Image (tube, rainbow, N blue to C red):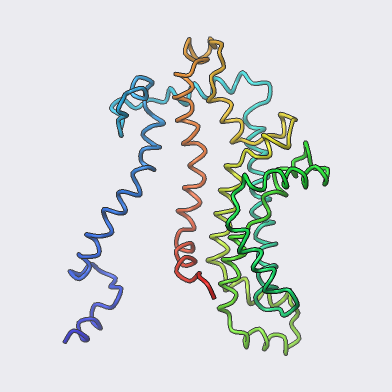
Length: 304
């Protein structure tokens, strides 16, 4: 009888069924708890200054306002270099990082998964070991490499250090490991080369993990201030995230365009809330668009 019931409603029923109630009782509180920080970011950006200074802080706002965004835009209007220049730098470098990361990661993962050569296990072991290193641990080696390559004060200083993504290589390799060797061998018997196999067989079957790696690369590049802080002295080549961080710092001088509070830490707090939302939105939008593929990656990845 129970088996027949499962056959009727299915393991994942398309419509609501009473059997799902126990899952909702567990998942809904977790979903609400994980979504609260995102909602708080939105509310915080529209709070007036007096609500931002409340202690303990209020989760929501009773008097939403756009003043924080007006202050942010007015302050940016007085800069020697327009905000659009910083935004262009970040868009250009982020797209380049995503593209080159996907290309390099996919080719390297294919070689580590489906090609046989010496030191194959050692190289993958080194990649796994690199997963344990935090960015601060490799800051000095990165600077030496960027300096030796002559990339200081170059737009490439934003791109090259971000192309090494051990977690991306790890995820893509796990997906390629699942592809049957017989399918690839059959293509080779028909005269297909490695690039044809990669383009026509491998890539169409690893789209979920490529979406995940794209999100990781996008977030790392879009939010990064490393190059702007350490490698670039030319203000016109710095990133949008660095620019936003400078706007939210106390300047010490009042600015007539945004009122007497523009140059102090109080106004900086409101601008910081607005800047946080602006920097967060692209990450959220990209994740919403690709979230189904990301979930697919998480369900299939693991040690092989």
